[in-house]
Image (cartoon, rainbow, N blue to C red; front, side, top):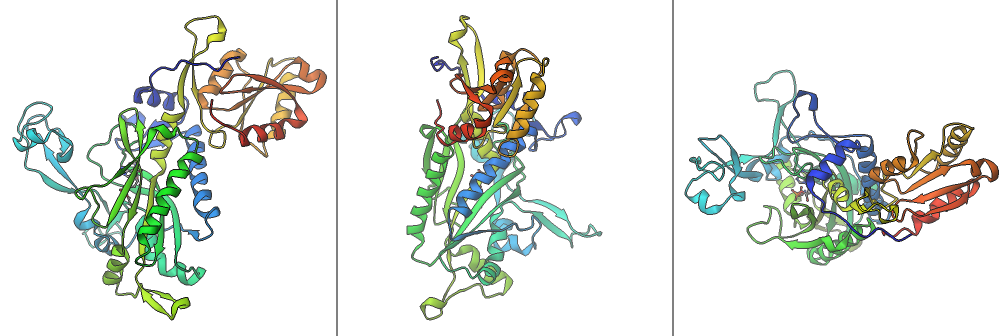
Length: 454
Ligand code: GAP
């Protein structure tokens, strides 16, 4: 059977609709009309998110001997954010329309209109541009008089910096070394659109690599290479990725040099991850604001003391999930059906990332096929995330699994009862092979190992 050739255009509306229909992502608090900037991850979404996180974690910690993990608290001492520069600098320029009341980021609208104070939506008058801090504030303790001011962290990085000395001492880390962390971050974004691309609550996967001053450029280049290779391993269409170097006006207050890896989403090329040379800015500032000595003592080099430079790789977990939804999505004309307009929607996730790896489907419920299918599923559970479906026509069940991105469907039929063989249907090619049930697990393991997207 030939691999289906034709594909239709991928749009964000199609992705959003499939994500809801199949339980990847739901709007937060939908029954109350929804909460903008926040999303909930359903049964398939959380499986996919967990797998991306595990993939990244393995890549950073297990495959790099010199990187250890951390899980720091979201709530940090408020001085952290003064030291980091976020209180002063973590702002977006904001304008409001006095007529239609729409709010815009001043740097994202037509600059001629902005100069003339003309609303890009209704032509009404715009306010002066003002700076708006993106950090969410809340209050710790019972008295709400401002004395308990605390922020929800806008990046996970600072939790690593304030723990760097603890980790050097407790784990005897020697420079160069890295600390990896995955966790929630919060930003009061003015414009949240494009589904889960830019949200107020999201997750980051960040790694901070501590190096000797002077070695920073070498390790910056090294980490750029490493991060590019990661997306290759993830099985993403590399033609949709590109580098973007920050110009002087784009660089964050802490960065000496920065590159984004951008992905071509349906709305165009957008940032996926940043690799930043943060110099010694962060540790110097924390040393200054905390009064603690944050110098590294190089015992192998005559106790030389210095504040390390930091190379940061900062990826959005939820943004990577959106990237994978877009990258995996295909609509194919299923030519072999003899029906010119028979299409299937299929999510071609790498099998290591797919929320369900194997679906077990009895051809019929009766004649002991369902029982045999359950027994076979039981045997696969230790090794794979499985699903079981006995409802409806087999073709329709395959299509449901295609939409969930399940790479392998195992069908139990009357021959299975006779000779113990089952059919394994490959999601991408739709080809079926007969395999003995006792060899099923190792057969699937081999397929996953040798997987290349078709
Ligand atoms: N510690 C550096 C830092 O936070 P960033 O470029 O502001 O750098 C890093 O963010 C990554 O976090 C981005 O490349 C993106 O993947 C993700 N990210 C940032 N803001 C986001 C938002 N509002 N919603 C979803 N993901 C976001």
